[in-house]
Amino acid sequence: MAGHIAAGVDGSPQSVAAAHWAAQEAVRRGTELVVVHAWLPNVRPAPLATRDSTERGWAERVLREAVDSVRAAHPTLPVTGRLIGDSPVPALLSAAEEADTLVLGSLGLSRAAGVLVGSVSLRVTGRSSCPVVLVRAGRSAADEHLPTAPGLAPDEIPTIPYRAVVLGLDARSPCDEPIGFAFEAARRRATELRVCHVHEPVAGEDTAEGAAAAEHEVIALLRPWHEKYPDLSVATTVTEGRPGEELVRATSEAGLVVVGRRITGSRFGERLGRVAHAVVQHAECPVAVVPHA
Image (tube, rainbow, N blue to C red):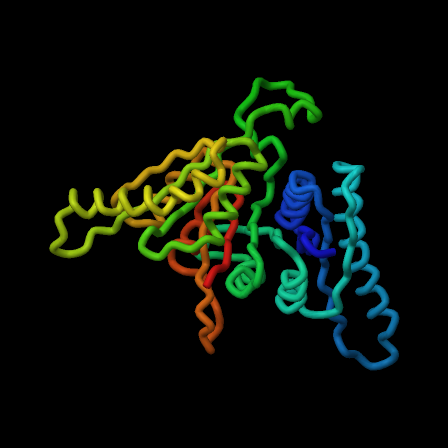
């Protein structure tokens, strides 16, 4: 199943949205979708075996309902369900090792508590060996496309142009993996790629000169990618401010935003950087977090 898309489900609305987003992506890539659910039975005395069976039945039902829902929407897509006997984080990390991309549900920012919720998705995203796409509940196929007139039939949605893909680029620490992921995502959707670099002024630096230097760096960095994707429309912006805030603002009308995550090899565990963390918290569209060295 090399090259497939994997989606983690747990029965929540956001995981259902993630499974359907993953199915759409698998169709775009012409690959298989593997839907994963983690189930770790509690150790109990023998008399409670019936309860264990009931718990397993519930886990199987969660997986089956997700797979059936995806198959109903994409009848020609090869879909496999996989029940993993492990706790969610190691199970999903194991699935990520075999996939090209892992898609998970995300709750985003809790307005009531003001904190990020959905710790499993965050922990997996910070440690995954492959790109992770985080999708919020309520996302549909139509949300990836430009606004249309009311009354559009579902089979008409694919004919509507896609919203732009946004790439958050750090020209001071460039890496090919997020850039390549964003260019490919825009190519598959035949849509515009918007590359956003945010320049943070250094104390004592001439603001105009610093911005101009950053713009030259971005142009030079993207030149070989323009040559590789000559037919792709690419718009580049260099702004000044806080990278997380500016990038979230740039994604207001996007269909997908792509950010990088540096693999540090820290003994304290991997984690999201502050820019990626801000985008995952606040971006309304799906967020692709791409690991790189």
